[in-house]
Length: 214
Image (cartoon, rainbow, N blue to C red; front, side, top):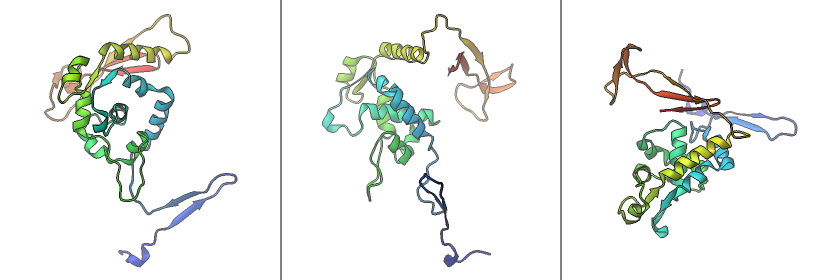
């Protein structure tokens, strides 16, 4: 039996605990977010200052009065997207309207009739394909952001060593490969006789609690 509109009254539950604010649960729905874990990632990043240090490896030659999204904001948005599993820049055409990403980038949200719009794929593409030569970045028409590969490599080494209470005297790397089977005509896919199928073969590098995929 389909309920009538009169029966669709949202129910609400309240859980109260001593010396704690009440927890209210209802079924009104509204704008739902599936990336709530990003709030934890953003908080860890604010404490460790990883993206802030990473941003210092770039040079921004854009005119400040024509910039809607700061360099740090662009870097955070792209990295947070990768952390949450959004590898394709096209994903940001939807994520730019995501309230959780806006909160993670410390944008103001919740103002009536005013939506927060983050950077889209075209803007992030100019960051991702920025030139290595800073002079080229200054003279380029479309790519006004440059980066220093040397500074980025040094930063990665520094962050890795800072994760230890004391710099290790010896570092042991464990390399292993695994299969990532595909079901289609994806690019750069080959038949692997060991795994008996068409797959990607990503290389995993382990160093204690750290790991990286190539």
